Image (cartoon, rainbow, N blue to C red; front, side):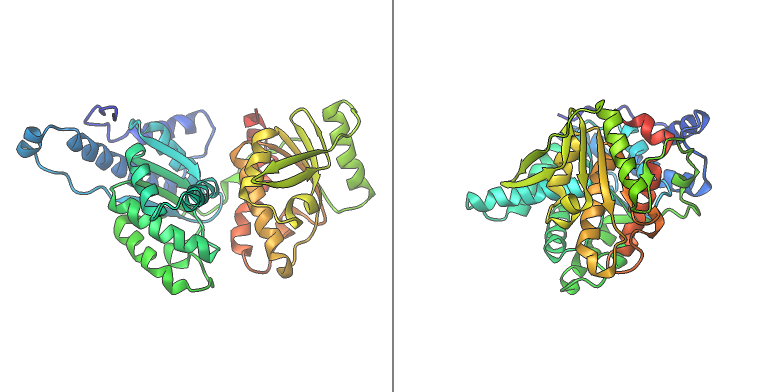
Length: 374
């Protein structure tokens, strides 16, 4: 059963939470964020009114006015502008018990797992079944970092989210792209266009127009965790950090098994892992592998991140998924690379999405991020 919300909710609830964070200096006040915050407040108010109406008895419904359908919200804008922070603020304040917040990569992995299990059991219409299942347990679904780069994912997303909207699931999405710019240059994009039309009808499309990447404001620790270029000093840098963190224990490799295949890590000691870009991003690993690594280790040391070229699109895509998993799980990252963070991948397919990775890599060196590491 849903926990019955206390109505009416304060019209300034999210603003109060936002101002509290500003007072504690965990965020900087921004006019564009405040405008977006009001859209989230409106959504929260409407969601509570909708759910309160649904909980009324049949007689109470006859005697009261049905509220307008609650629209979902799609929030887009440049990297580091505060989209995820505002969504988290909304999620934390939302008193609806049937809610969930999930990173898009993890959500998509769950969808693939569910549909795979349905195929094994010869269960038809897996996506429609999943939408109904989600509706039974989740009324408010917050999905962070929404993006589409694969034709199979594009087809799945279109059917699943169309069904979720039909079932009345209220969805809050953050993305770096406007819906019209999703899946740019993808194969059979016309088959994805129907989802964009459905999304624009079911959700308010809001742009967060903050002018700067707030991650760049954060104070950085004096401890260097990103070393370039790849030379003898970089090798010594990796060796020094591993030896310091592990108290110079002999290196012991580890093999992880995920979905029937193996991932080789150069060395592991307790919650510290040492690996290389080749092991993690040249080999054909995926989101499930990176989430497994991020869930097992508190610190990951990666050696040998190269300058990625347009021909290394797949390696760049894997690196994006890896950093996303580490960031979501608050893993400390130490690495050596050929070039500065801002120059890792600047041309080729997916370079726009890589801007988020650059921003996150910079933030992962900040005092605030390192303080959040468990």
